[in-house]
Image 1: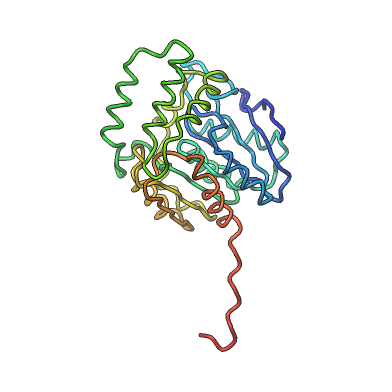
Image 2: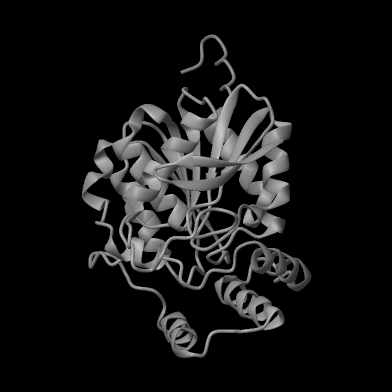
Length: 290
């Protein structure tokens, strides 16, 4: 595994490359999340299937550069950040991009604006356009909870920050998989230690960026769309819109999954991704069959 800070687009991003596979799978995580949020079972399964895995921590998260709140940016800037990471690792071939939540939005922009760098898309718990009036808003209860968090005093101590983060991921979880309190607490502690940054511009970037819904027809390679029925951030209609407007898309709706990729779902998700990237060959039809 090679991990390093990469100079790109005037900033530095932390990125780690694992494996020496025949194809590279690029993982783009959600807002404010470190690369450790990708389940170990998911990454391990991809490595075992002989893919290389490149994980990137966006600006304003993890070990990457933190941007002043006085310098707003858009998702388009973050897509350009990722192109610079590919260049820094000498990855000139097209990669298979897996994006979760905000990372899924950035993945769409990579496919639209840097099509030669992308071979396929996997879009998990994401949207073609935050704030697009043609798509439903977040669940009312979730909006209320997030508003309470926004106007509450920021957590000051290490323990309070860990609890704040765990509470967020508890809200995002669905009913299909038990909430893994111990794992979530460990991940939160690692994130607080490495890159606590409440001034993150990810929310502003997502809201300031234009909807991609009317451009999706420009994407001419295959896409896998994975979405949970209990996602409180993006209702399943967001996934249906992606699958409908992308010219070559498969939609997998997971009953009871929230806005999450839990460890218990990691290996199953990796199998879905692998089958999307390398579809099993269909058996030959017997002679004389119709």
